[in-house]
Image (tube, one colour):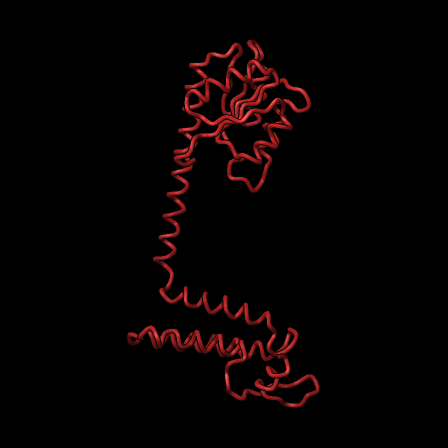
Length: 248
């Protein structure tokens, strides 16, 4: 959750109750999306990505339990673990237990105490934001640790790999597989190893450091002028330059 308004999905089939809850939440500064049953609520959940759901249990078409299960079973969405508060009638203990087993976060008993409602909403959304901040901090720390541990030149190597992959798609030696591809990739690998060994012995200016990258990309893009030989399908030896010319 960011500095934008916290968004709440209110699910209740009785329009008067739903309107009362929504109006009070809006007065408190929340953005509210309303649904009259579980199916409609799930569609709005996918579309609006709310920060919290308040839902009745007994509703037509799809009840609150079904909605909760669909939300929790949704893969690929960060907020599938969204805080979920059930509304239940007085004395429906079995509903509360079932909701807890389905990983509901809390419940409110009807008739609704609106002061308690606001308190629970604040608690759940603030806790969710704290957890999200902790996760983002852990991810940031992990990225920093990786960047410290990796060699400085690794990103140059990644650039080489990316550009080589793009050039391979053009198949300069004809359709894959072809042994010339392996030969040229080995040259690139050997060149990178030589440059790495050289850079460990003495400082290398940036223009020399990138020479191997340019050479590597040039080889597979058809820009190298060396006359490397390779066997054609007929068994005759042909230069890699002539092979490139035919592919074009």
